[in-house]
Length: 416
Picture 1 (cartoon, helix red, strand yellow):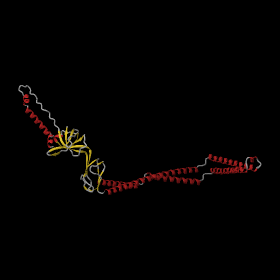
Picture 2 (cartoon, rainbow, N blue to C red; picture 1 turned 30 degrees about the vertical axis):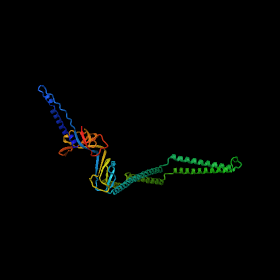
Picture 3 (tube, helix red, strand yellow; picture 1 turned 45 degrees about the vertical axis):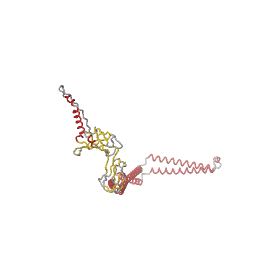
Picture 4 (cartoon, one colour; picture 1 turned 90 degrees about the horizontal axis):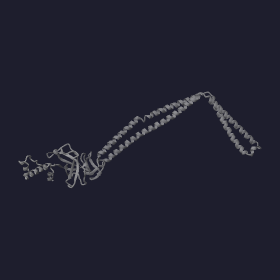
């Protein structure tokens, strides 16, 4: 491996080429003599082959994305939910440190308090809306009653129009004429009933006459009632304005107006919503419950170790029941779908010839028959000093992959 590293060194390759050219010139002096022959008018140029150099460095295979996870608090691992080698998704709960049940109970308590306060506030607004609807309905009824009372006052105070009096007189006359016809018809049928030898008994018997008489008596009774009603109506219209009725009507109107004013005040009261002081108290309860919930969830997250990325658990240090400390790596998750090559061997002389996007070939020591193509993804700006040399870290993205790749495999990177 040391010999291979020497063979791959660019300085050694250049020295080897110079020595090779010198040995060729020493073995064939005739070429040099011919080049400087006295009879020659112009010396012939000596052709030196162009030396092609490449940069070759060692690197290692690493995942393109991986994380080391440490707990935020110290404590005992109470729940270990994964094993080394498991594939996990982002957000998967890996382990729990400390008493998780009490934290879950605190979260449920905070959620219940938040829900109760929010429901109470919602109910407060719903009741206020119902009260406003009831007040508006009461106002509408009061306004309708006020209009009716006002109309009654105006009708009571106003003198009766002549056309209404004349109409009442005509109606009375018609009722009296109807009563007169009913009486005549009743008398006529009674007279025919008494005449047993009359022609009507050819068609009717005594029972039929009795039925006819009962019907005519009902007609007469109805006509008499209509006459009485018409007489009273006509008499009322002829009377002057009753001051007592007018006073009653005016009193009813004033009461109706007071009811409208009271209903309007109630509507204005509920239009502004529920009691502001009660609203402030409930909103304060909600904010307090939200703060407690956030604090409880934050405390729970401190006790939980969750996978931030999807990948494979390549290292799992603690076991259930063991003690862990904050800042101490306990889990390593790697996304083994994509690989990169990291090299830390590029010197300050070599790195100036490397650019992002530059192509490279990767040869694996463990798989010498596999050559993978890649390109430079990033060059670290900060240098490190190793064995007296100033070196830079370069990351190459692999454009090809192999299912046998493993984290940490050594590679030879040949930059084109």
